[in-house]
Image (cartoon, rainbow, N blue to C red; front, top):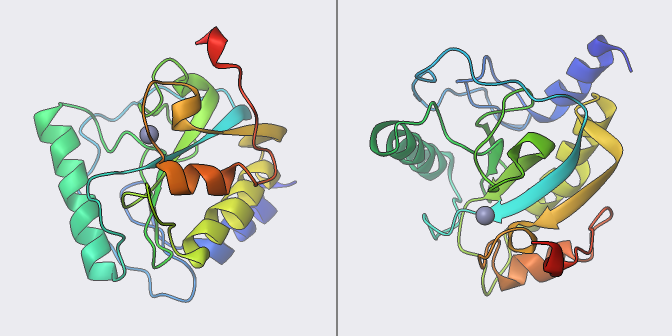
Amino acid sequence: MSSKSVLGCIRRHFKGGSTTQRRVPSHHPTVSLGGRNPTEGLLPSLALPIPFLYIHHTFEPDRPCHSFKQFSRSMRAMQRFHQEDRGWADVPLSFVVGSEGYIYEGRGWHHLGNHTRGQNPYGYGVAFIGNYSSFLPSRHALDLVRQHLAKCAVDGGRLQANFTLHGHRQLVDTSCPGDALYSEIRGWEHFGVRDCSVL
Ligand SMILES: [Zn+2]
């Protein structure tokens, strides 16, 4: 696929500017969250296409974001926390998804994240905002990741066509992405069973 059509694919579903502008679905006006620039210019690059997609929930904030205002507030708080309290360059996830269907580009397609211990060079970390132990994100948000994000990533040469999808708990001792969300993604295409004995 040419880079032009890749951009077309992404533009259909995400709008926005550079890495620090937030990308929102095309039915919404392009809005900046007022986030800051990453504190360092050069995050290590990923060697594309990578073979894994890791699903997370944020746990905190534990409520799904149903409005753009709420979403941008959560994202700014998350960015501040990671930059000031942890001294990281930016939000450590590749992408963050709100229930209204907003997708926030954190480290994005090209830069190494810090979301799944020991596995960051091999996969994108995508988190749904909220605690999904007992209920699911909106269908719209689920479809955005399952259908559109994954397809754009494959079509754009960012994710291998035969990529494997895992929940965070399959790789690290954590309850993430919550029981409800984890049972949902077990039914998704590309979900990979993983033998925990290799942890
Ligand atoms: Zn996680």
